[in-house]
Length: 324
Ligand code: TXA
Ligand code: MG
Image 1 (cartoon, rainbow, N blue to C red):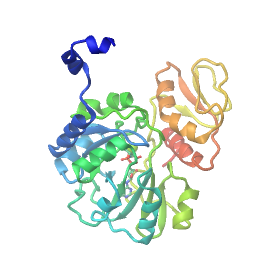
Image 2: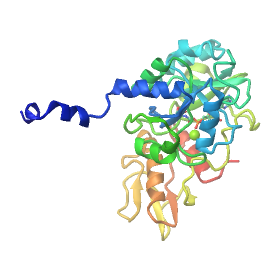
Image 3: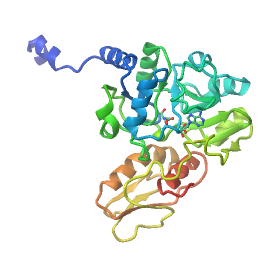
Image 4: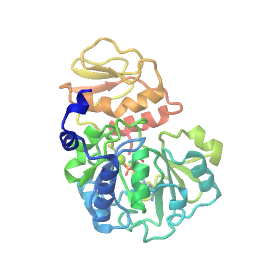
């Protein structure tokens, strides 16, 4: 075979650094207070040591994120989460059912040193999640502590769902970046608070019905912005104006269809077969593509508000600036 005849040292020089070496470098970067781009099954994150306030401050700065909006502490598993947060029976049941996976639990703080004040935006609660992506699970196990990781976009913009988009958004601030391929889910985790009654703070990949089957009825997020600080208007937003529930595009607009795409220019279908999972996975990359298309605005077809559609419509309304 040709490969056998080539100089083995040549191959050595050309081969990308092996996975283990890269993971070790990423863990070392976190320990040194650096930032790391990492893949999750939902969206790409920009990570820092959650216990290190200087690292967390650099993370807020890299995203241009207001420091009153707290971060999610990512852990390898529920055993790693228990010292950080106070788990009641419902939290245990939700973690047992959905972790590792796209569910974030907001719980009363346990050990306040594990996730620094700045990462919690001074709140007496903490958001914890055990992500499912194998690369990031290995990094978390290697690092050994909680990792604060917001989505890797600059604040207010669509979350990155590919390695390339993540690097384009915040790569300049990262000491290391782990390529885990395109994100399987493409929408951020569901955020549920278990502080008083169970509350849905952010609809996401785990649907309301799936959660209620385990935790009982979910109350809505409080209007009190200090308790759900991420519910800001104009979030996940492309640069172009967004028009929702559009039957078809107006002249000059790009169009995101749901169902078979009409053959128009600058038209993308979120899912030709009207599959909500596929639409969720395509949402942010289609918004980015439409944004770059030279159109005057982006029109989006109506999306059914059931199951995963609740999370898709939540992101679309925020991207359009409709939620205050
Ligand atoms: O899927 C995801 O959750 C991704 C990946 C990277 O894991 N991360 C993510 O992080 O979406 P971020 O920072 O973009 O969104 C975290 C959300 C925000 O809406 C924030 O306000 C909310 O979680 N949050 C964090 N801690 C909270 C707390 N103590 N109380 C209420 N909301 C909290
Ligand atoms: Mg985000």
